[in-house]
Length: 183
Image (cartoon, rainbow, N blue to C red; front, side):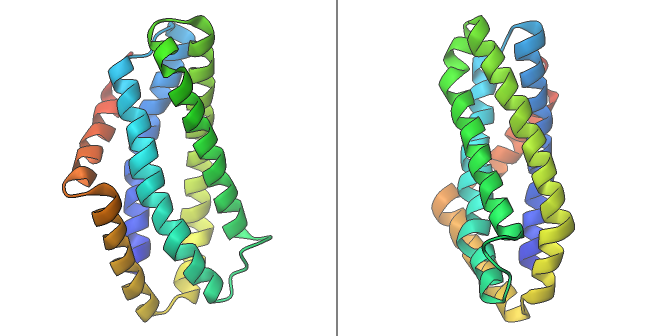
């Protein structure tokens, strides 16, 4: 299914971002520093590419289609995924809140940033594993070829409306910048 393949490809980009975020979290707690510009890039990717694009595709389209095909919204994998999306938003919100202080070297802000960066990365790595290994194969079993075509079109609309022209590519480049950044 093309829609599932697209989501899985996005997971590979998100994993690159998580590598950079883990380094930032380590730098915050172990080295006592967070680069403001790189921190801003990281949270922009997390807010826009991960949440407003990738999670929106799932929450607004994939999950409702799966529910319509008999996958329960409550008490099953869809509820777990939605809960984890909310947990991720909390971690990102905390990183945004303390980033200015962390980049100035404030000890408490550095601790909080580092803790939430590492917690977010750990959460998302486990989340991606569950989606790739359980949820997406389930989707491929219950969704029809027509559902897939609808999802592909809906995903294109999200990218066009939420991301804009060329933004997806920019975030891919930034992901690799973050993963290779030291300090």
